[in-house]
Image (cartoon, rainbow, N blue to C red; front, side, top):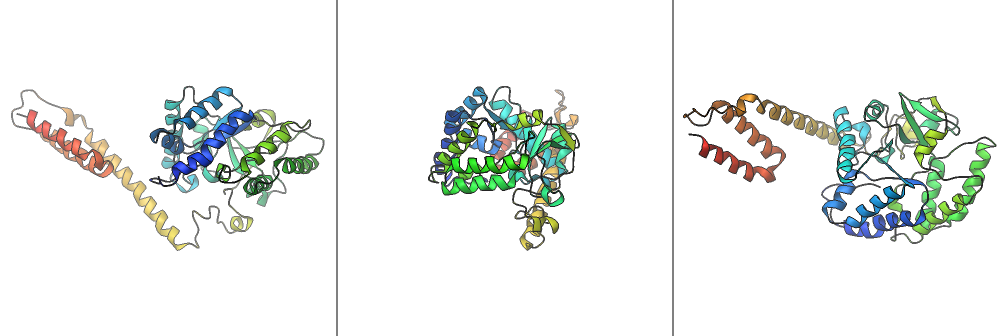
Length: 362
């Protein structure tokens, strides 16, 4: 699932009623093994806007155990395009805030927004305790004759599960059109069975949940029938992604950068993250330079705050009768500047506290 950009509110209730709630309710009813990624930005929105049924449904899905929750970045950024510190902050924030809301929150897997992956994510994910990451196979297939079918790729200590772009797109197409999920499941089992042969193997399917819901007639029924048909098969079994990681051997491999939108033509041009970054789109040059300036500005603001927290700011001699100490006055000005820049909605309270400091100073 994805989260809407801030501060979008128009249409969110419709999205919740037509997409979020029907999907979560269906997952509760189906009991089919699967995985779900809910970024903190969406959870936060449910919580702040009073959509508590979605939170209760997620809690019940976790209790039932057939749905594996997979981590993502808190506010749905294209991670490889961010500085390392920003990547780590988005990942950590997602886990920490979910852990505050749900007890025993822990995810062993990670799905980057839009499956936008680059090797710079690997050490951050490993340091964060993740065992695996899901990535689209489109760019991998540009360098290899076929994606892994009987082993799990491993890069720098992180296991990489490659999503089948071919069959995931087929599933999305059927869901969008409300086609027969059972027919697609039979076609998939026939095609994948021929590809795998007699040896055990696996296939990872992943889709954006926005294609599901009551706004698309037959979409939920298509997915329900698709899962039920596979689950009733004697040769195929539905499992959560972590079971694939546990059930198949790993093999050191190289997974190139890209997203689930990257085409082979874009890959060979070095255009890994179209439509979010492209040398052919002049606006991107300005947008990413602006983003870099904003990130640097926050770092400078943090540095100013760090300097203001000097011990001398809090040194208060009861015998002082000459007004606000010089160190406290300097720190106060810096704190007010930081609050004005970072949280102007709190500036009135900050000025009130500053006035009270003047009152208690002799």
